[in-house]
Image 1: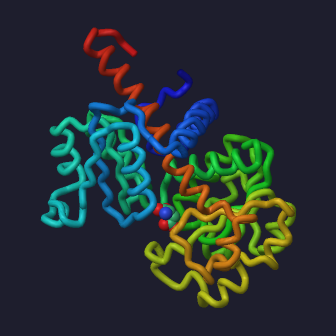
Image 2: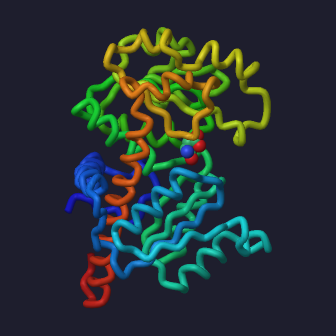
Image 3: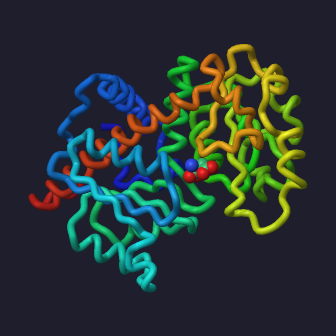
Length: 320
Ligand code: ASP
């Protein structure tokens, strides 16, 4: 099998073949999810724990549904209510859970790198459901699957990622993934919302939407991550919408068949016009949510196979 990863911590260490393997498997799960009986038993007998230290609607629900459809025993830890409040460290919490023998640990955390740290301390497969400004690998994979199904390919496309790039783990994971698949990436946004060291990203940078969107195949909008801003990065939301918000007038600069994406949650009238977001002829935002479940099923299936192979090898004393 060409998917060898033990954990899914980011896109950074995935090889293009591993990405393709995962997306191909996810395609089969899209079919399963469209049937009236959505059931497989590939995770039967395995325990999945979802630990979300930061709010989430889509991602948590998506991982929960994904695990249940594959037959896992799924538990959602409410981290607000847990011992974290009593001062227990992330590592202590992880070690306590580890002693309960989970097989898949899905973790979201406000600090970049926290999920990687946790993965070093446990004996199960860890999936990063978003860590600070660092990575959100399943979001990039679901975006890739959405693009591949809409455009018929995932290479040699012109893709614009627009808005608050600096605070966005979605942008970072997408830049890594789409770059590995040899696409041309343009980042569009105000200079105050561009990360430092942008010149090393292998992307083109624009601060004018009309110029940046010219002739692109895909327009990916991002939410203004106000919770990660500690000062005035934009003059006002009104001004931001005027210059960087996506509406039909600005979209007209992209290709006629360009698709519009947004990872959610959306601020309608701030980064995107609400009517455009709902236009099923241009927007694939609902497809992104659908692909999210399939991609998470594929990711957990592949990691569980590797975990079982490793445990089997350890039991028989064979090195893998
Ligand atoms: N839901 C995505 C994330 O968790 C995007 C966002 O919050 O804007 O990063």
